[in-house]
Image (tube, rainbow, N blue to C red; front, side):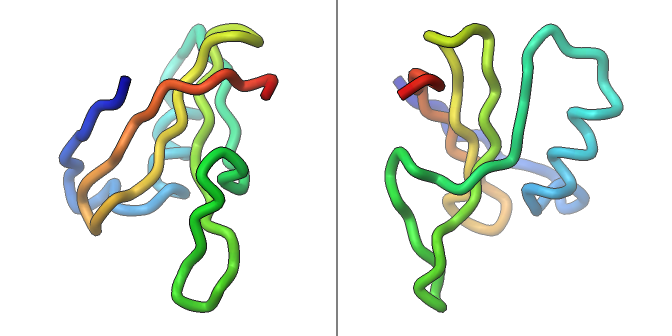
Length: 80
């Protein structure tokens, strides 16, 4: 299960999305981590980061940028 979301220009980085999540009251836990589920790398060969939204230890979503203003949300099990 995945979902593609188009973002506004002010939210075109994981840091901006992370700050937005910190300002909103949320019932979910969220962290910015290295993507160990898909092991994506950037142009320098370093691991890409993603934001993990956790509802519980068994249910969560991984959020990362597909393009400059396009987020991809994928279902994951956070305690993999």
